[in-house]
Length: 129
Length: 248
Image (cartoon, rainbow over all chains, first blue to last red; front, side, top):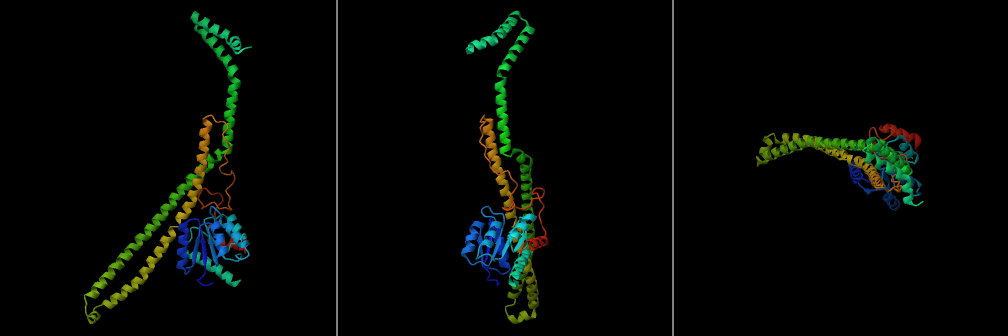
């Protein structure tokens, strides 16, 4: 997938959305849309033509885990790469996300390098599949 | 028996004994009669007193149970203090990190500006291009440009680091949000306590937050040392390994 990839960034804190957007722009991704909760993100995903989802977990309306499950359950969205970017770091949580079909998992605080590495890894896995 | 008949029957003898002792100036007799009167009154009022005490105790017991008072006092409020202390630490670290980067970048940019100004001045001192060739200007300019390439990259990196340092706001925001929730519960609980102490024994049970363990599926926020229960996975390699063994 080229750098024309359309990415949706979901986090209830606008500062974090800005940071992620800047990181993505630094590595060449410029088509970035933002959402502040799973509830607002899901209809956007269903209506739009997004190629990649980056989502937080701890959000007041629909948490990231539920958004992931909704994406995986959707016939059209099911195979979308989903990267969780979150401060949730308990072992059971990571396992739960893995079992729900998350493509990658990055813990906050994170570095731009780690974010890039995980995105590249997910895309490589997808390309190989 | 009428009420006044009852009182008469119960207390006339005691009153008469008190009066008699007073008239006789007999302190001992007076105190004895007084104690007897007091005991009589205790017997009469004791059941009512017991009822009131039991009712108040029951109201307090219900209050403790339904507001999770014990858990709040022993665990959640001390935890909240640790959480807020951690917020202070995170914001302090982020501010210092940003200031460090500003302090590193400032001199680089200041010196680069100075060097550029000097070069420009040297250029304008030579109105005829051919004279410039005699000076070391081209070499100086080349050296400046070499430095500029490295220095702008350094400043660019510092700016990126500053960007990442602002991530504290998300983490501290999540922690503070949790404490706000707890304060809300305390506020409701204190309101009930005020009503209870005003004699409202029928304080309605307001279940403000469910008395269950934090829901990991919803997310519990950033790990706070000494507070959040089970230890967190912090190594990215460990996370990747978990994803591999449990996921697709």
